[in-house]
Image (cartoon, rainbow, N blue to C red; front, side, top):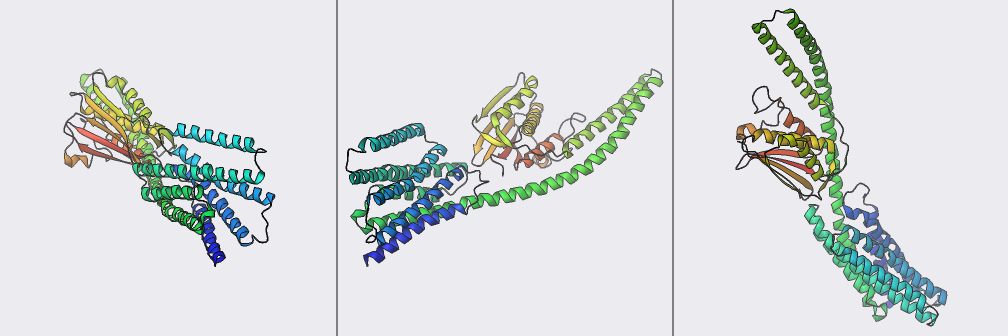
Length: 459
């Protein structure tokens, strides 16, 4: 009866770890931007090796009468135990790298000292103890350091990382916290409780292993949601690219066709100016003609810029650097302005630095035009979970609610006639949409605020 119970416990014990291995193995983590994706394959390796270790222990337990515990077999079992826990130690080390503990370097130093002490102990004790005693002490050290130590450390790091996931907006913090608690529980049961105490120890370890499996199974759903979001974003981007490409081909053809007669008319205007007598009326009429042609050429170029769809070069960009660069480009216009900057210096987003600089340069230029008298502008940039938010607030007169909805449409402008084409905000909106973000306008108590939302990590 005891053998049957032992068999069932060991069977469930090993299966739980094999299930952990396959749960992670069948999860597509290659394109994930969630940092724990780098550490999970190591946990999967631990599940595979530890499952093999426990099932081999079951084999030796069942056939213990046929396999006398020789010195070689005892050595093999200790090495096997060590190998099964090394992967857990490697997982704990990797988790320390992706957490934001303030004392993580000190924890690593302590871990290295403990490992050094373990190795020194192996060398010093060898030959000073009877070999079987040497193996028993080594096995206990392995359980304390690699079982208890690595289990508790990885569980605490997992629990801490779950809070970071919640802050970043990924969700799934509860399953990761439960996984961390299960890892801590397993570390304690594997490192402190000895099998010699009875079958209940194996039962407790099995429950902890099942706890790791179930909580991890729910935690891994975060990658399914991420993958679905990536597919949806890629589909939307593909549809938008196709739409912009079609629009670009049409408007480019029309723009080029318009620019040709405009250039011819400008040349004819110049020739006519030289042949007409120096008359004020003639010069005034020619000036009007030339101004109209120049405005038409300018609008034609703006349409061409709007239609021109350049693929995004996606790299990691420090948001503060992009905004500071935009401020520098407008520096000569900001003389005498009260400019308030509040940018998270550590905020990094995935995008095209050149295109983003064009967006913020344009928005800042509009803010300067809007508050030329009050001369007060504030710019802020901060993280809002998965997004980066940049707001540019001016102290102008704002825009009526009826016009806000039209503000980002092509050729709409509130500037005096002849001072703007109305394409600036439209181009800015197009670039932000290429980054899977959006732009929103709203009036504040002093003027207008433009809020730009851009995902920190693009699919």
